[in-house]
Amino acid sequence: PEADLAAGGGEVDRSPEHTDWGCVTVLLADDRVGGLEIRGKDGAWSPVSPVPGGLLVNLGDLLPFWTEGRWVATPHRVVARPGETSLRRVSVPYFGLVNRATVLAPLLPSEDKGADIRTDVRPLTAGEFFDQHEKYAAGGVGRTRAGSGA
Image (tube, rainbow, N blue to C red; front, top):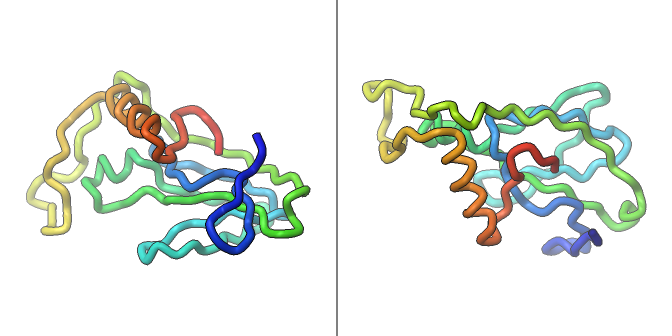
């Protein structure tokens, strides 16, 4: 599909803002063409410069569930800056997922929880977790579908 203009800066969206659904995403990125950006706590986007031969690890949506918010998923996007829109960007992702039948529950015992930790997380299967996220994504909020690339 045609890329859309990103907010501000005259950049073009190659992949709009999203988080990944799994545990972790390990990415071997093209070190010739950049464009990957992560959103910080302050809401600002920061470019991620690929390291030749290096791997990038993004946390996915399962980790905030398992850690009850202690670790958060990495919001990210890929943009093409002016002059780069005709360049192809190649990346090889590995999405760390769990079997849909796996029962997910918080990993920390209750006595290890601080005041900033969510306590409203109930156990559910990975299938239920992914189905909930798919319904959420259908509402227009960006998530990488389990098993798809970004």
